[in-house]
Length: 593
Image (cartoon, rainbow, N blue to C red; front, side):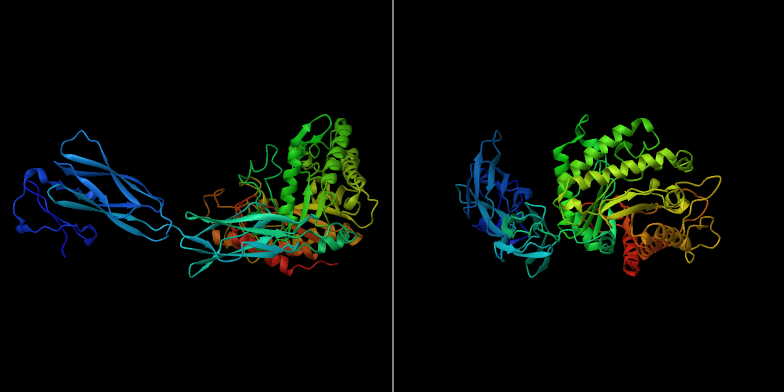
């Protein structure tokens, strides 16, 4: 039956578009005239009221010269008369209760006059999100990394995952026929006690919880540190830096904009990395400058980050980074020697003590780039000021001795000392002595690789040379002024061959603690067209060659990354080509031991 609202006199009849607005009493054109005081006009904006699943309130305005009664057809909606100063407008407040059904509901409000004429307002309450747990509410897993907690929920709106503890994480769920499946990944239990976490799955319709209990780890035993330096390095497939994060003197993430989280670390592992270098500030977090006491809250936070990595069966190199230069920018200042030795010993004693129960997945590096900023334009200083070399070796020795003195697993932990400025050429030319260790075969040397300068670092063209946009003999662009003119494949091999001869062949493996290249746009030379595709191909190839040749010459590679290549929130690749290059090199490279 066609729905009609009939209104008298000066108001015209309004024909509604849908049976959704059907009146409870139908009137026809033949009903004849009615009295002026029986008029009822529902403006179009109020003929259909729609509420979300969470309910709410809405005004309802009706044009009528007489009082009206409002009656709702469902108990989840009410209409209450509100006093109005207008004699021709009736006002109601419509209240809709929240939905718990997960389906769309409809009702109607009938507005009746004493004469029997009436109007109808359609009320719709949209479906609410439904969420129910399909899988078990309690799960027990073993102590090893990689245990999977499968959580299945039934939902009509995509749910999200959260965990009360960082040792359990999950990426986005898979969905099939309204069932969402989360595969939560459990980190290795580094403790000797059972532990529990509450996993929560939620959407706008509510939440469900799953309790996961992980059994205790095996604890420490004589096999906690089985690998010497060569064996440890051989276990590193591909490494990456968590750069510009923990080493910021003003606090974690001030430079990078993000703090380290479980999803990020899990993402790094999914990309193929099985080792991370954590550049870290310590001097900037002293609670007592005179006693060199590190703020306990900072030690605790660094342990959380290390646990996120080690708990996922990743190797971790933890260092003292630049840290405002208190050590590494003061190598040539003899007046600071006693203070540096005292602080180096105090800080490394505290770090080593805090981490002495960790197994061989964690190894320490005493510095970052000692003397690099002091010699960047005059590397001959190492030759003309020989006492500087002696001072640096003493600082490195202080680090090694302090760690060994704390005992526990630190008695056998692999330790990393840096070449001069972490430079291959400067070290091979000028480093005639190195620190020693009471334990045989547990020292590792560290170098960084940002070669050639015009490709890796140089920011703009200079009078003496152009920046390099294209690297690799097969990646040169015909006619370009920005092809690399040195430092390509053969140079990489020759550089790593030098450190293999100097260190690896003598029983000291190496880490390339940093390597990367500037991301270019061609803006440094607007006069020449920039080939972005060829640049990306060159950059991926550079990553491939350096990674492969590092491993081929006994050097574990750690890519320098600060958020340009990898999303710091979830560990996904932002520049996939760069990651692909690293992984090709990691796959092809073979350690010579």
